[in-house]
Image 1: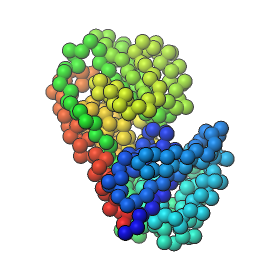
Image 2: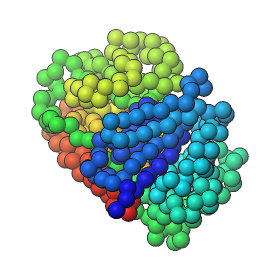
Image 3: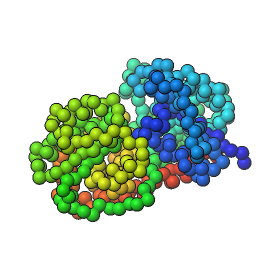
Image 4: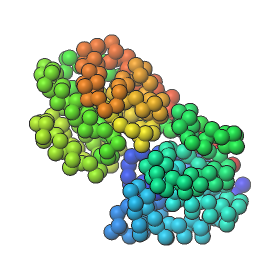
Length: 382
């Protein structure tokens, strides 16, 4: 049997360590045994104008070509070279694995399919952007409808994702539907939290994410002010790991609230071992996202794998599918710093709840490990 060739296409390069890029790299890197006799290529667009075309070669056989855009509008980037590559090379691949949503990539995939009918399209649905681009929504809807028609299979991470998909529940598309939750690579040493928070000199709260508006970090920052004012007996520090366009605004808010001694911005940490060490040594993970742009939240799963209980928000999507309320975390209403504060105090005061959430969190991370995800995907590429 000759090698199967897969082209994975998305708008963001792998060096953006969060979200969909992390999913792609977790799925395909370091897994030649799972994807035996399958050659993987990845193409993406770099949103930094000054960067030239980059070629990254990985020892595990993965190749990633990163193209610079010539036009940008909000989260959508256009690259002629990216578009031409898909068109000219589609016949070389048995499958194109498209990450939804990105209309520019989708348009390229559609034209490639018309040019090369034997190439199969696999869609992994992550979110929808129609509400973000109301003026262009008719065009986006048409692109998606055609792409769904041409696809071989449509993958949803959870049933909640399918429920929120505009086209996903149509009978013509349901027969193509598969559910494959995204997992993570489990750490070697996993231990439950067994020391009461009251016994510690200070508790460590942590968030690991790209610093963008929908992550809601200003809400968790405001909750720290309430904690400091209302419970001065609880010594704490709050670590924020990541970078992004909201970084300066968040730092200004911290300064304005007089929290510079308590909230520490650690910047981007590419070293996985170092990031895991921060998670391991933390006590509570804050995930205060405020809208549906946050569709899953892999960083929650990484925290759970370290036995760190989660405080997240009620987005009623993949975020809460990963971390059900009172199972391995506490879910509160979004945009409510007072409720985040109350959840922190509850975990601080209730040892039994804290230890139970830690244990159940580890169990949950074992259910959703990356090896299971890889095997399920590998079966699709036949």
